[in-house]
Image (cartoon, one colour):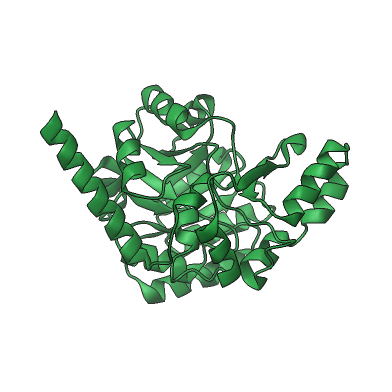
Length: 312
């Protein structure tokens, strides 16, 4: 399936893997890229040299394009950006800030910058900044979220900018892919679906929580701090919400979640760990390889497009 995104990035299928902290490391990114999508290494708060090592390990597993996600609030972001340029990475997605100060260097280095946005205003700003495309991410997604749903956000962003739009949030199968394309998106980004990929290093306890989740099993913490996070409900999230309701300060809230994502991903702590996942967790029913995930989505979407064409 050709879109402006597949042509721009040289990938077979318009499917991105989200740059999830602790989850999006070299083996998952390489598996997604090898399957024809765009695998993305999540730099998160890692030191620049760790990101360099992850890039090099991914390239040992695939010769296809890979990307790096840079969290701009990370104090290491300038050093990570330098590593991206030195290692010849050609695609960067960004979050938690404005990449403007890096754009000239990225442009000179042939890096295509694709920021994640949660509003039309942010999308317009990123287009003026020189972004190659934007990821319009709805509130259904896991992790740090905005307030607008994917169904409402994507078409408004598509209408507001000339650059390609990638839809994210609440997408995990061919139906979601087809819906995003009908809304005008030229690719989709998925995170939660790839948490349960066979190549994902996520602890099996976490994967089982995603697979067994129901439609109402996610909740949002951190609204009082201005940085809301969607996750699967557990003891930690309930305690966090209790503290928020009682007016706890930022320091106390941060102390509760310190290291909690790592504990969930690496140690399988589903009680006091942060189980970042989107509302589509209730649709993810089994562990599959990245190749199986992507092929299943494209096959289902193809059937839906063909059916729509016949009925039209």
